[in-house]
Length: 131
Image (tube, rainbow, N blue to C red; front, side, top):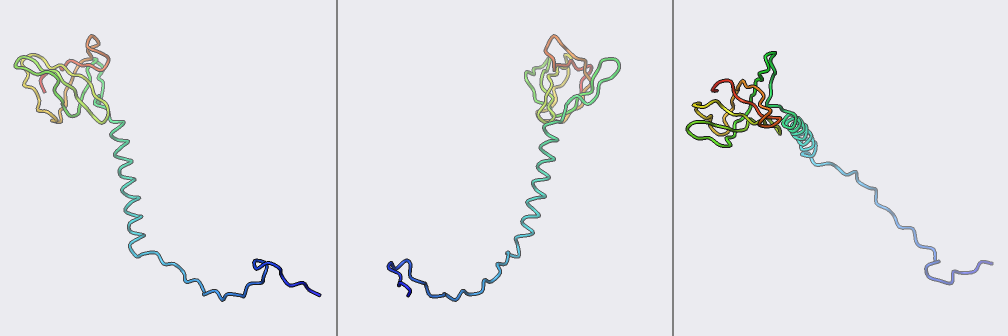
């Protein structure tokens, strides 16, 4: 003989008819948004690394001069001399122009030939001519 369950939680539960699960559909705009996001991230990755690793010293010649190129940021400029920075990406070099040169405009992209000036620091140059 079988004993009936003594507690309600032990009682057999009636079978519940489950409804068939409908497959979830992705929105139509989902795939294009993911593709655009991946392209944007790839472009920002390339631009970011280019900016980090850009160098204002484009080349060094056999005679010791270097070609510097980038955007100019003045440090001290007056009617007789101009000193400033040439920046490319995250790097910059200090440049001293000869007396009498017209200073470049702020944020102007310039290309200058200069000689290293170790007396001013390890990333300092004296321009050989006005830009």
